[in-house]
Image 1 (cartoon, helix red, strand yellow):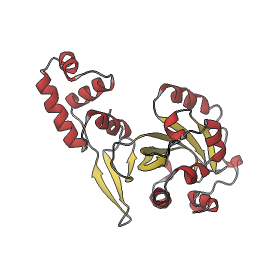
Image 2 (cartoon, helix red, strand yellow):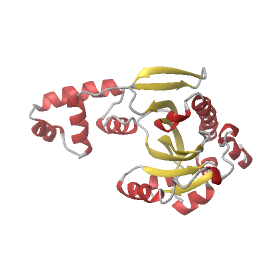
Image 3 (cartoon, one colour):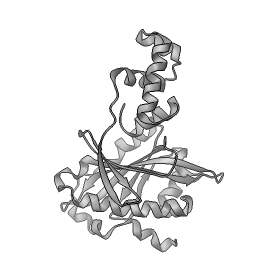
Length: 253
């Protein structure tokens, strides 16, 4: 794909033409985002659909692929054409189109309550492919309900391959899963964790061992192992690191 195809990411159904329509609700909004970026291990950036580029890029190394935040900010969507493999780039364009199809069917009053999440590869400065999870949430809309600005959170994926496209609605125990082969959405219930499973995950994020977790929640190490096995089965992961990433990316803890 050529650099001219960058415009494909900016769907004509979401064209934002004049900031005069947008009001002054965004005054100083970047300051809390910058503070959050300093306090989290995830990468954060902000898309401006009026300017068709990035407005903010955090300095987390995961997403930068050896570039500085200023360089990625300057590149905007050209960053993807430089660091995403061709097959995944085509997939991203397909997800972008499907996402806007879905979005147009949502009542305007509810549009900021939805987030879309998916996995794709980026190539780091050593040329190694890394599978990341990318979550996009609208922040500011125009009066017509078009996305003006969106915040994106990037973290390591717990998945095995690109795809895993999901849409979540705040406060609703449903997940809309997109099938890339059939171009259809399937609704499922969101994975729910027991109180004990959440405790074990939360303590694991602090680096506690199985024995230390057992002492903290007053059970035997074998009980912790039992709950971890059930947790891995439920989340379809193979180890506690993947479980933590999955739970974080899917807002389970």
